[in-house]
Length: 361
Image (cartoon, rainbow, N blue to C red; front, side):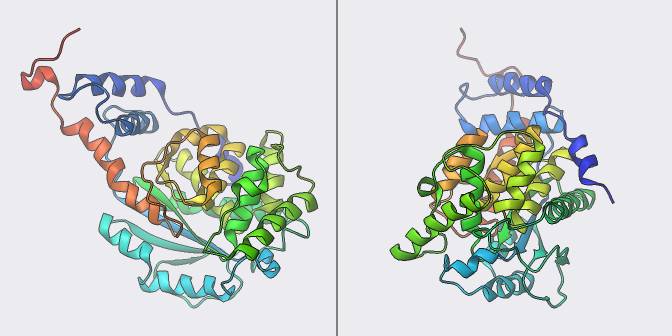
């Protein structure tokens, strides 16, 4: 087993040399300079991640869905019963969820990781049991996790990333499942970005107006209960990041943060899904700032906090379809775009090789 400290120590910045080479190569291809827009930036980032130009194709892809329950569910922040988390894990394992359909469309494997479901799950193909606890404590009353629990979940996520890469994955995609996890996400985004609760809290699975207002107040209460000032970003550094993650995060947030860190340590790209992944990526970047260079924003969720998180991370979403499902669905939809960006670098002719006249200076 690799310790979390070793994984953090293995994270290095993306390499600027191959990125500059990739940018120059883009300008020599048979197309107007910059005409592929954000896809050119993706190709450049992939070169920096791999340390090579052209970068390897980011395939096959592997989706990891981290599942956990939340004590804050008791505060009435979601209309869905907590049992749905375990039921959806069974649905993923049976291949019946939207994430399964999208994964099949793009040829991605699906691994479901029980890192904190509040029930014992039946064994199933593709299900990994890495349970740290049977859900978190209620963040509105105090810390959701102990530091040891948060560290264990981070480690579990990093190990899943390591094992998927060792099995041949060349691109990782984040997924999540956990009733009430958008409440914890909003609290994390408040803490790491310094934004107010009302500006980052969304309706999640579709709550009514009264529940939405209660949800905002529960986020505020959770921040106060854990000594985190609203509208004031927490100080930087790994110790502060771990404290915040344990205080108001979820076990799946911690595991996804570890998954992102593990991807960076293995030098493979990781496509982030929606608001849960965005909140987790904030924690990952606070623990190891260089991880951001390995992240690609698959989409922009309809949840308002997701746009705030992406802006803070400096990431531009590839897809904006008003999705708010989670599971990794937005990340999976973006994977063909990431692959296309890399394929251009391998297969498109240059002006010189194709005998096509450039526009000149």
